[in-house]
Image (tube, rainbow, N blue to C red; front, side, top):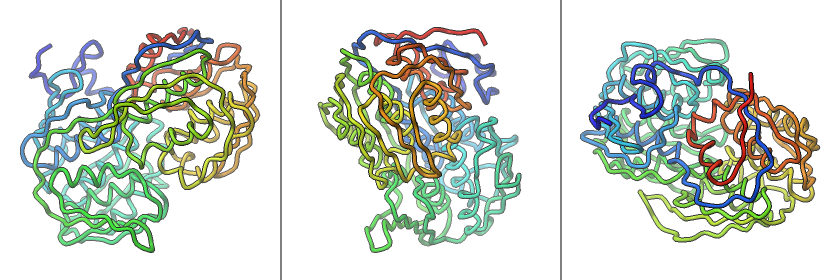
Length: 468
């Protein structure tokens, strides 16, 4: 491989031109997941998606060179890197997981010559909107069918306070065009819902506004943006006050390029962890998993259910707590998950619902209405898929109750709705169900976990490609 090849080159996949042009995974690829023998081995999951997005964006907003190791090379993150290149940064892949970003500095984004296509990346598009919102440029954003259906008003509304103007489809949906603020003003914004994406978009917009931008969140959400901003040299502080977490950012800093080691993604780790908990006789090691307290609610929940998970070699890497997870099969019981824990595990509820189906007794998940505005309505998608496979569920606007039954009958086809987490969740269900579980499309998995299928097969999973 030529290490000087620019962004977009991916060994063994598409040519550079094809990978830059692609915004979705192509034709549907149905697949069945069959009952598995005990899983054994080491599961090397990809780099953290949230941190990978932020590393590329802040690298592009910095002066000098940022070196990133462990970057997730899923399509979502590649689309963010492609966008940073369109804004004028130089983004280069050195080798697998190793990337270099030569930034343009805060306020240095140039106006792209074409539409910014973010594919399926909800996090990517929202963070990018924040990063460009206070630059005097005009940008049009689009994405795949799933992303075009997702609401963007929760981002465009607070960005308007800086002076940004947005026009687009009804409901603030993509495609939309944003005109960045020519003379941005700092804002004080209280988030109406727990959302790290909203918080992060406002903070990124505040970088190029004079004075202090303040974000107040009643419930703590993942703090990767605050940690990384500080690492790049921004003046940022967090105080716990009566109204919640008050985050203050001093605008117009000079961010300096950094060396970033991306920890392995806890959201991706949840899938092999779940599979080992579901398949009798399994024991696996999942090394180097980020244990940021704003992200590790799933592991706390699983241990409360009786999961045999031990945390080994605990350490700090790239400013983030990390540990190796040893996971063994064992009996699980249903619990009521505290609603306050939802922000720290909102992406893990689909796989938790699968685990709950094989536990004893009901698992109650409340305060999860944010699931309805993800890549799809994940509450509905999981409820319908579990019901089709013989599991009794109850659902409401912000809750899901799964009545665990031990052995799940299986045998049904589940719709994935272009959602990577729905696809992987039902593939894990099939590994423990009595009959194979089929998904209508495994393609979306590539957006966050390109190696999911071969990794799981190396552990002992049995998947079968099906005809469309």
